[in-house]
Image (cartoon, rainbow, N blue to C red; front, side, top):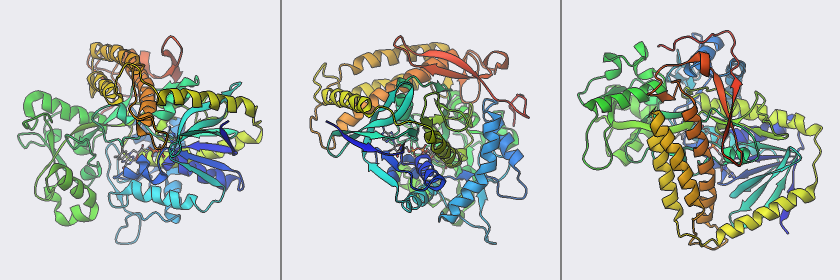
Length: 574
Ligand SMILES: Cc1cc2nc3c(=O)[nH]c(=O)nc-3n(C[C@H](O)[C@H](O)[C@H](O)COP(=O)(O)OP(=O)(O)OC[C@H]3O[C@@H](n4cnc5c(N)ncnc54)[C@H](O)[C@@H]3O)c2cc1C
């Protein structure tokens, strides 16, 4: 028999979106019982590593309309304009609320909140707390969540399955990593806030826990994933490790240089116009890739490959230490350069997934009782390319909205037949047990993961070709087959990290399959999807979201209309 835990709402994920949802539920209806399930202690969620900042209109020279237009244009007209409108309206309220809860935003001399420039944004609207923004935001949310006695945390519990009966989602099966026991955590609504899946690629800024679990959980229960072909390469990762050097470096005035010391974004036409280093991420990543392809990359011996330079020297030591202290620390520790005296080596690195679980503006999915928010969701704020610093704010705005709507939903929702959910968890316990003792073809999980990483890097990089994308689809299918041959060395029940890695790999494989197939299907270039065979945007055929459903025969594709509004699609030029 598995242990059963009953709540009103179950949230999976203790990052920015999950914690914000939990607080919203507690505030909307005090006394509701909330389960917060997380595979890591909440403060270790990836939100903690965000450096640069969170966007919201704050200055007199700015307006909600400008923030909305920048986001629409940044999305290459694939963002839903009603969602974007709601987002920009709520953003200043959310960041101010965070301040009232204790978030130490950096200040101007006169005491007002300081904002910095970010790529694709017309004016300075990115709020920051030096360059450790995610840490301060997550800490604020985590501490605030502790005020509410009705949030029960299930830390270090790994969710392996959504519990669905008769078209309604009513809880999760969770593996207690400390004991190896499976638990039934039941509620009348479930909110997925499980973050992205950057670990599907080998060279990424993402932490090891970002394996796309929530996307795979929803997908397997028949919920569509949306716009999966759009993944963001951040222009400035440290070669070798992929550690992020925040866009705030360019917001504070940093330059990008090629091997000839030329500031190529100002001397060559890469479509970013006078924005130069403050162009959007998709365009700057392409510019760096082209510079390297044209032989103007900085060459180093060994395996690391070529890169460009990010030059901060002209900012001076005082500014670097007050605004970008973490960047200095990271550069010294991981690249052995001091940005006060030397340029930092950088190159594009996989950073973020625009796609995710298809939701409406309330965070609701097509499955009754199932919501999603944050990076795991695709509410269609970011379209084909996210603007830096919109994501942290997205976690707050849509985490809160999903929480509030889940509260409304459960008012009329029956708990369902508990015995049937418990039976599902028991079946899940047997499946996981079988996996734990598995001795099959002798494949190592690390090797299978590497093959997956290689396939995705080759097929879904900054530039994509039909042939290489099709090859990636076939390669992912082959890796999926080899997954069945995985064997585990560790058979223990207590903190069996090898078992967790095997469960995560299955999720990554599902996510990878949807990304690669969605990429082949979109025969145009839009935002982060730069397809060499179809170099231009094709609104007459592809101005739509792509939806992918799981079927036993493989992914099935559908279209969904983009919600346009005041801005008609136009050529995206800066
Ligand atoms: C290095 C870095 C810097 C960034 N900087 C910025 C920035 O400056 N500004 C900005 O706007 N955006 C930034 N981003 C993006 C932004 O930080 C993320 O998109 C956002 O924080 C995601 O938050 P989240 O709550 O959706 O998920 P996460 O913070 O990733 O949290 C996911 C949660 O889900 C839980 N979880 C996952 N799977 C399971 C499972 N199977 N069972 C149980 N629990 C599970 C995890 O334990 C975790 O608690 C950055 C991203 C990175 C990687």
